[in-house]
Length: 207
Image (cartoon, rainbow, N blue to C red):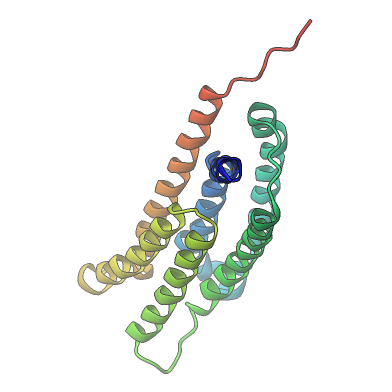
């Protein structure tokens, strides 16, 4: 019985350490960049293309994340094999990443379309979807930083609108607020990634 409990603790620690490389954080920060730059690009590219151009960028970043996990992280911490429960969570994680990618693109696109509803309703609906998605993902994936990023995202919406209404900042203030939010998330990811490299040097090859 005690052995099973210990194994579960070890597996949970390994599961948590899977997200402690910071690479997923960097990927999420790159997704948020769209909300900072798309309002500016829409002036020359239009609403659709100003969002669509980020898909290849996201695909490239995600590919680099996978390569970094394989060739940089794995040699340092080894290969982690999870049980059935954790494998199901990994499937959910990949599914959630895909959903967030698609939802982020769609919401980024429709946020520039003029609906016949008050602006604050559209803003509240948008923010609520993001907060629910990040909360559910944080809970099921044991990844609490996702909740923090969801809160930062919603604050970017609220503060951006305030800057636009009260200070006349163009593009709803999103280039400023989402630019800061994406920078915070990416910096957190880089700090975690560098710390992992420092604490887990490459094992020396035996002669």
